[in-house]
Length: 330
Ligand SMILES: Cc1cc2nc3c(=O)[nH]c(=O)nc-3n(C[C@H](O)[C@H](O)[C@H](O)COP(=O)(O)OP(=O)(O)OC[C@H]3O[C@@H](n4cnc5c(N)ncnc54)[C@H](O)[C@@H]3O)c2cc1C
Image 1 (spheres, rainbow, N blue to C red):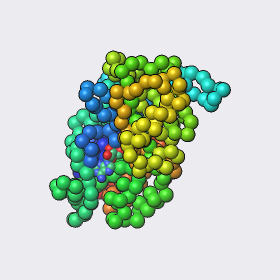
Image 2: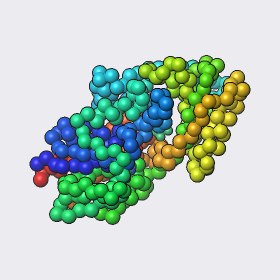
Image 3: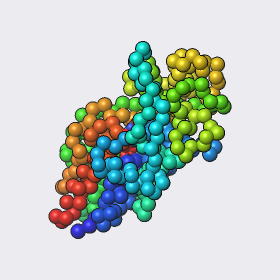
Image 4: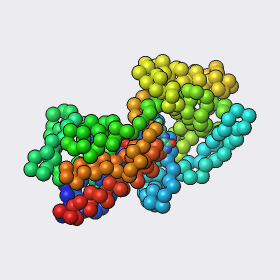
């Protein structure tokens, strides 16, 4: 038998579930609380400029994920990015050019957008509760709307948010409480002139900045713009998670200027901070996915395997195999 399946979340894990289940012949609907697809593969568009607020690039270690990204590259939604990367500790720095970094074009969320073709995705659809009657699930949305008739529900939100939806229905998801995810502040810096910095990306610049990159030098971005994205370290993010975004933006830009004195006099024309409450997996579940056959509820995401988009893909693929097997036995 083939099923009618609801997927909660339209990030890499959710769209992987949806795409693969649909290819197997199931009827799928995706529910995403944000007005756009992508989750942490996020791109914000302001005044015709794209800003990648979440993951700046992705890598592929497995054949399956490589194949997936190369397929999206053929559609024109993904390409390689080889920035000048500044790495290393003081006194031992070097500039390299990574050869296997993939980015979405024209923004990181183009990756999930390309995966959504022919899939019914409900945007601005925050699921607040699940109920079940006569072996069919109903999703209750925050706007009062209900979507019913689903044989199975797969939740792909970050672990704490997924657990909140699943915990009342079975103990099979209790292990999720072991997962730890750290926050991250992302700061967008919009500049009028090109920064006189000899690289396009750098990691681990002191205790505040985990990553800085010239976002506008990615392929298919507007070349008449100079946009930098700064990301904070997990420790600093935890300490200042409730801080005022304006202060965070100023502090992180000040750190950047302190690290690179040649830019100290430069005033950004735009500076804005965005908080990810659940950004990076610090302690994963160390299981590929969770599925309860009794309830036909499942959960997947990067938090199952590690802090990478590829982990979300692998976890979702594992969940799809278990769900499809369960329907085959029905
Ligand atoms: C700042 C930052 C830097 C990163 N750097 C890298 C990197 O360099 N390389 C790399 O590979 N990965 C990186 N990552 C991690 C990568 O982005 C994630 O591993 C991956 O995107 C996770 O995908 P996911 O589908 O599991 O979760 P998500 O992308 O979080 O998707 C979950 C979705 O569920 C939705 N949702 C949540 N609750 C509900 C609800 N109740 N109802 C409806 N929808 C809901 C959310 O809005 C979201 O769209 C980074 C992440 C961040 C934030």
